[in-house]
Length: 270
Ligand SMILES: [Zn+2]
Image (tube, rainbow, N blue to C red):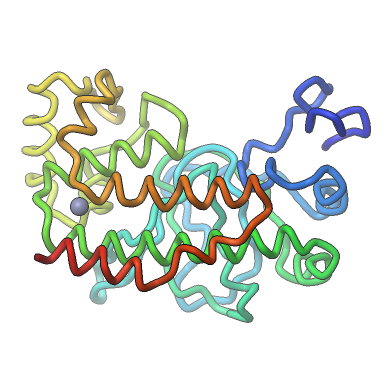
C-alpha cells in the first residue's frame, strides 16, 4: 500500500495515496509499514452494520471516508446515536481494553471506505507499536467525552440546534459539504420522529444555510450553521482539537479528564 519512496512525505508524492484515516496518517512511517500488511480496504455501504451490539468484535476499522454512527439500544426496537465516527476515528478500539464484544451497534450513515485489521492481528502487532496504542487510547477517551456530551445535548437542546450541530459534525468528519443522508437516517441519529426532523430541516433551509433534495444535503453557509448550533458542537470541537494536537505531538490526552465531561453535562442541564 505504501512504498519506501513515500517515507519522507507519507505518500503524498508516491504512486499510492496516504491513508485517508487521520489517525493512521499521524503515525510514523515505520509504524505504518509494520501495520500495512495487516490492513485491508473494505467498502462501507450505506446502512451496513459493521458491528452488532453484544456480538464479538472481529475487526477494528480505521474509517477513511464516510460516516459511521455508534448506536445504543434504547428499547427492543429503537436505538439512539451516541457517537459519530468519520475519517478521524476508529470503530472497535475497545479491544485494547480487553473488550471481546461490542457495546454499541456501528451503523454506516454515509457510505465510504475503511481500512480493517483483524483483532488477533492487531493484538499481535500492538506491542511493537506503542504510538498506535496511545492513539487508540486517546481516541477512546474522546469517544467517551462525545457520548456524554451527546446525552446531555439530547436531554436539553431543541431539535433545530441539535440538527445544526449534527450537520457540522458530519461535515467536519467527512470533509464534504454535500452529505448523502436521508431524513429517515437523520431522524434516527437525532432520536426524534421523522416529522420533527422534517420541520427542523425546513426551518434551517429557509435560513439559507443549506439546500437539500431527496437523499442529500449541501451545506452553503457553514458560519450560519455554527451560529444556530448548540454549544455542544463547540465543546466537542474543543476536545477534538486537543486530541488532534496531542496525536500530532505524540502526547496522550491526559489533560482531558472525565471531570471535564461532567462539568459540561452539569453546565448543559442548568
Ligand atoms: Zn447540544
